[in-house]
Length: 282
Ligand code: 13P
Image 1 (cartoon, rainbow, N blue to C red):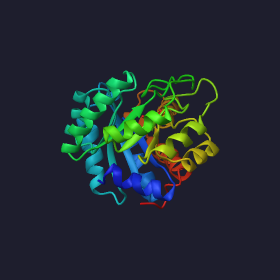
Image 2 (image 1 turned 180 degrees about the vertical axis):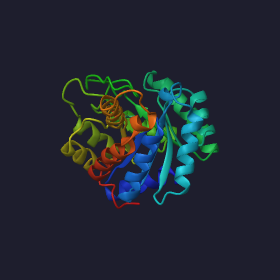
Image 3 (image 1 turned 120 degrees about the vertical axis):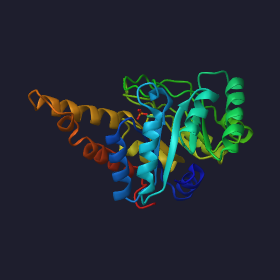
């Protein structure tokens, strides 16, 4: 595994974005690894705090770590959207070398305070920290989505926040949402430009599902270096299982139901990697 800092520094320098795929099954893990390896791309594998109740974080971590030991590309293992120090600790305990602390539901002061505390703790463990300023719409980890009207990141605050907290990456709220878009995305390119001009910290885009190639190109040109994706992978995997179930009569084996899922994930992940200009950067 490599550090978040290292992969994002290269992305910042060479103007591409490293994909960060959240996973909840072995098929998703395998599909993402295969896509990254076939395209020689660095990749961030994420586990969202929200999914911890549904999947055993230790099992996911074990699978990611074991698979990473025979991988030829740089891997970061990221714990996504922790909302408390306890949650961050869990991420670190299971072996993540990068965590996101999401204080977006808090007041600005409380977000500062929590993020600073997480940075102090994570640095002592050699773990990178991403934090969020403003609030990305939708509910992370759910595919339902929302409107892209939201609490946008303030460029002036962003630079102060990044400098004073000592974070390694900053998630910005510029009109993307987690999950499916209920209305056309209303991306705030000018805000992104202003944030990028005021801070050196690598910028992260949440809600990567559902944007066009042109939108991604513009976002990356304006300084986005990490793009989080979950919904499109989750839907493709779910749809594959549904197709497999419909195509068969009972009694049905779970092996037949899962057939082709990792291949589908590989295809979706590969498209993102190519769009993010991350292919060949490993
Ligand atoms: P999507 O589910 O919209 O792809 O967003 C994922 C994300 O931002 C995880 O942090």
